[in-house]
Image (cartoon, rainbow, N blue to C red; front, side, top):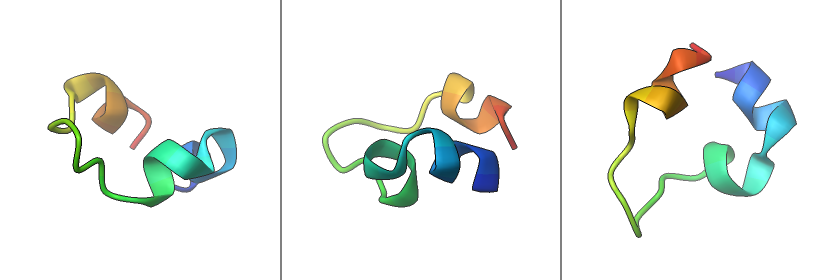
Length: 29
């Protein structure tokens, strides 16, 4: 998940309350 944090802190470092987590977001893990 660290890769996502460096890519998009605003969207990945926090839990997306506006929408459910998609497989694409978990792909970087």
